Image (cartoon, rainbow, N blue to C red; front, side, top):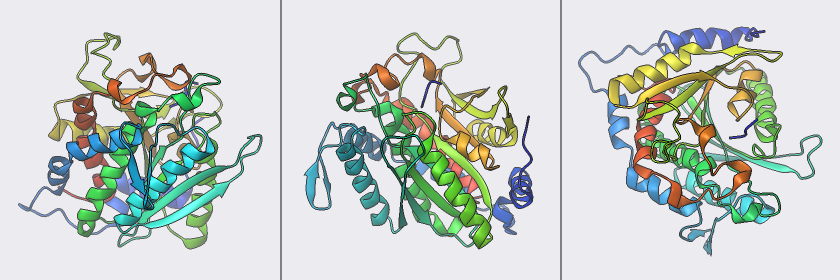
Length: 344
């Protein structure tokens, strides 16, 4: 996550957003199963904390991983080799789940290097799509960027994404939409180059193929426990933060209904508190807002108080509170399942 007048939605996206907020996910005509199983609670309970912790260890350089038959260590994602190693790992994981892999190379104006996004597509009964986007690049102190593993920012969010994909494959029969998982590049360098490149691509594709972009979720850093470091700034903990609006600047966005839905999932299944707030172009959700897609970003509580953040360095696995991370992952994945059409 980087430190750093409401627009009208296109008609089709606007219609889908209204349907989303009244519970008709993706235009599905399925009625809730009266007296049937609560599939959202099933997904909540099936979140595998051991798997999330192991993914964090692998993506933070704590243990080597076997990718394409070779043993590698993913201990940074700043230089070309580190970013390629991550993409190979992610591609292998998503392909092993049976998802379609779509590499997306781009060159952003004014950026000294090219970027690479990767999309993994889980086809549903409708081409209308939910986007789950997480940036994979890391940064660190100038001149020492490759010494910073970037564990919390944002391999904590990435570990949640990978677990989301695994569970969605298991619950594929309950999905109403296509789900597009996106590992985006160049968030930390400023300008959201990867997310904006993907936004332009998916907007054009949705228009040419006639499907709606129903919603987007940005899984941001979710592993640092502000309470343990006495840096929460309030007495709300245990809590995490949900941002579904932006105020000020030349354009403002407000998708409060998404935040309400997330808070409702948390209230139903979790003991965490939810801190609601607005945020600017600090992460990849903003590129979704710019193309009119209802979106939110969530994170650990008080993320900007994290002392080991972005260019500060020291963002290592040892500072991750895995129990806290897992407690956020459970409602976050259940919420994303609800957006994808899974019903109680």
